[in-house]
Length: 183
Image (cartoon, rainbow, N blue to C red; front, side, top):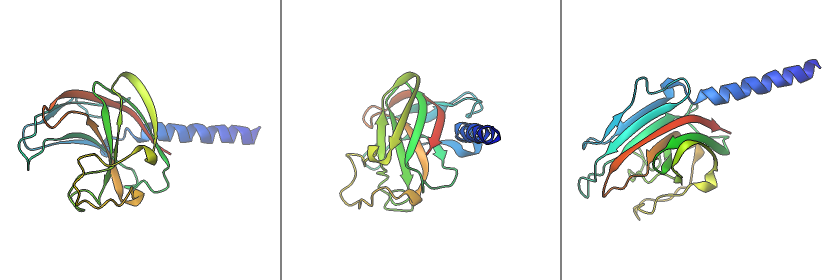
């Protein structure tokens, strides 16, 4: 009986840690381009039960200056080593792009910013999706000069949540993240 109680306590404490771990305010931030895109949210960004933000993305400025908006979750261990799946509970009025921020493709890598990504459907009510790394691929616009190194879990330091707005038109979107569970 003692062993059963102990195991139950361990399971519930583990579940509690995973459920709240992603809502640590120090791990959440956002970024927008310097071309006029904006973010708005009711402070604080990280609420008790969710992270919520709205974006206004301007259309692409020109060939060299792309617009962008992103909600960023900095991974607790700055890596996905040992992780086989990512469970996300979210709401979003637009399809939601989930990107693996991997240094090989970012500012300290080849600067293509063609990170592995997947797209989740829009959801006006809370939806949960479990993703494996097979669900992710590089975007169609990946430059031909960007060498594909695959998903290198040790080099992924953050998850980016991006409303699926087009370069051509930009647009408005809102999203909320209730849980990110790394398994």
